[in-house]
Amino acid sequence: MYKNIDSYAKNTLPDLSFERDAHSAGAKFVAGIDEVGRGPLAGPVTAAAVILNAKQIPEGLNDSKKLGAARRSAIAELIRDSADWSVAHASVEEIDRLNILRAAHLAMCRAVAGLRQRPDFALVDGHMIPQDLTVPARGIVKGDARSLSIAAASILAKTERDRIMVDLAQQFPGYGWERNAGYPTKAHKQALIALGVTPHHRRSFAPVHNILCKDKNASC
Image (tube, rainbow, N blue to C red; front, side, top):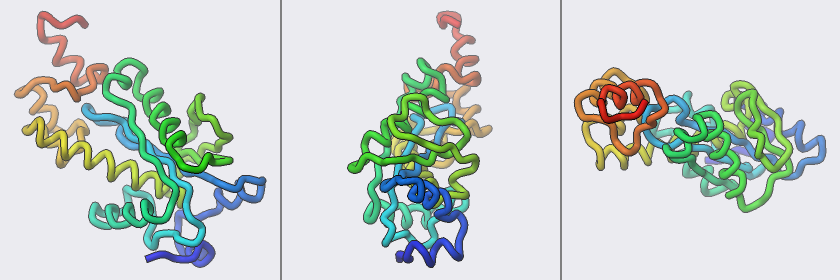
């Protein structure tokens, strides 16, 4: 189920090049950070931070988008069993108050704060580093496809957020959250019109905001 860190990096992408660069510069603990859920109309934005165990890299670890749901869940369990990890969220209320980018960065900072071991350095998916991140960091565009640590974070963030949306779908049936995870699919937008806005919808997002504005009692 696991591969040694050296043999894994030789044969598979994403690899450990960025982590090794950080170690060479003096960092002992390097965390990968990623988030999921910027685009949905409903639900939190979720981030994860992972410090991989050098002797237990889960076999098949890859960008979460390149894995099927069953494989993603299986690898997530291996990550939880072998690595130092943390998952955190920013709520719908925080998304509406701060904007989605700042809320995503808030979730990232919370994820790092939840690690057992404070990292010396962080690898962040994307080109923007959260302003409030308390450790030195490097942004990596498409990092979940290039860094194993970020790929691990992408898997944990997605599996946890998907689980939350499945739970919310049971409380608010009809929107298809168990299938669309809150993203603005045609069926989801049709359900919004037919069923209305729930407490878990992001009111600052245009499709939701526009529906609220049709209510003469709404303030737009």
